[in-house]
Length: 178
Length: 154
Figure 1 (cartoon, each protein chain N blue to C red):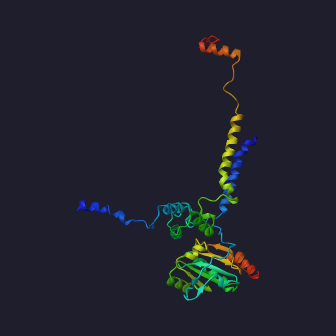
Figure 2: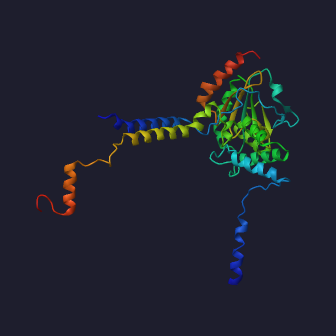
């Protein structure tokens, strides 16, 4: 058999290879340039105490999570049980970033589904969200003791991500020097 | 009645106004920068649209930010850097030439080159036909056929 009859087959295999890799890539997942960088600063009031202002500097020295949520966000509802489970582990404080939401709606939402957050920071205009590169709620950031963003979960956190990624990472970060 | 009704129907499209915000610029140069930017920046939510085309809420916010920065006199590069710092190279419809985009930029030229090589080889290998010279005997045969008196007498 002449080898040139194999050329179409070879081309076909190459194309299949590219398509197979393409299938595994999720275009919705845009890697954040902020991972490995200091958390963008903000100063935001909390949902239940507008007088209390929280900044990343205040949280220096501990590992913490920032979970971006909103009452209008459907997948936030789906991940909420997992976030509650994570908070109940008492590993690290979980802060919420209440993104472009109405105060009453946000409070009703937490009242109905339970409030796992240490505090929810209110980002009415979404400016902090933009600084943190939020483009699809929910998103979850892991911040280390030095105030560096170490990981970002885009989309709802499920049990698999929780057990296989977040918990091991958090344990590791707690061990690190502050 | 009908005469009045039909012209009234012409007013219906006025109800269907798009909900796109209008920005005022004091300087046409700034307006140009703004238009170029929202044309080249990509919407993160609806990924195959640029900021100009998208009506997603984040795209509206980012258009607003772009407008504010342009009005504040920031240059195009500064605004692009601001976007990239937050959302990565993904926001650029015109990705920068760097190590991980090298293939993207030179890939088409590589494929073109491969095509040229294949074409040249194909042409070279083709037998140089068309100019085959007839032997003396063949020529005689052909002339006889053309004259119409075949040798075999038909």
